[in-house]
Image (cartoon, rainbow, N blue to C red; front, side):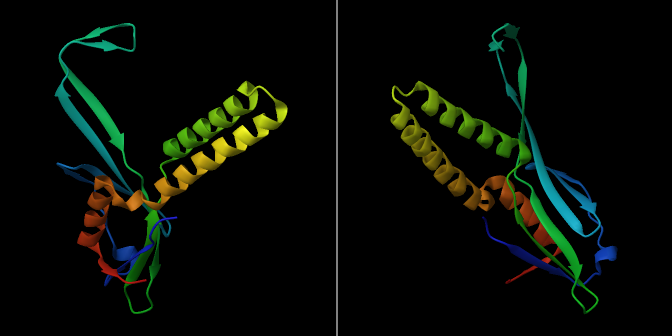
Length: 166
């Protein structure tokens, strides 16, 4: 998938305390369960909405609010044997993004399989659609750590840890 990151701290795993941080770039939150750590970033933006159509039902006036959830950093925090700790992890596809990719793949395969005129062509069209979509999905998964949200999460982790080569 993506690059694996390794971070080191002089504090033991039990001595590390993470605080939620609000900044211009959004909210960064750390969830910890045992030795597993998940770092997420949520961005809430407001802008001038003016008059716009809402959901095809009505109209709205004023400001608009948009939410963005970045792909989380998931890792494992372990003692390093010298009184410190090591965090090893990578960026993962957000669960909602994974569901969306699966739904689009299913739609592509079904539409290619049922809307093709002949039986043999259906199978070839469905296989071609699946291959193209899976190629794009692999490319997306490899580039998870190149977004602005990933940079904010990495900056937060570098404030608490020293990045080391794996």
